[in-house]
Image 1 (cartoon, helix red, strand yellow):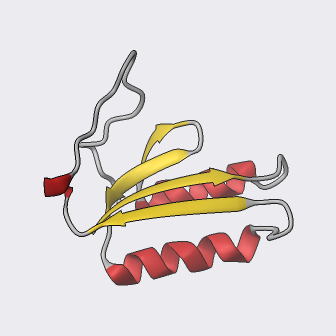
Image 2: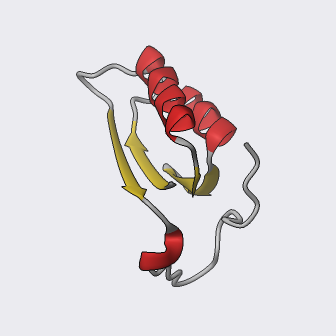
Image 3: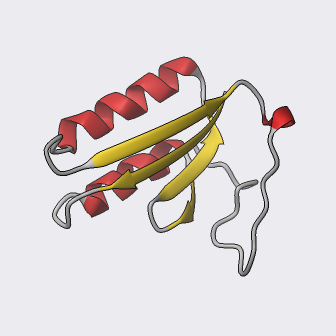
Length: 88
């Protein structure tokens, strides 16, 4: 499945969130990641993030799509990251 993950984490945890997300997805902007994952990889990602997050302060939004076929990705301005360079 194709995944877009967005997070807002407290200052002390933001680097941990970033490192965890980079293990699974491609970094595209400050707190935005995307890429193809299996269901088990997605569950592992969520568990890893859950271990470091403070649910009173932090927020994670995950959009999942069965395939990239039915959505359009448009970048306006400079492209950050390389969504085609998925390193899992």
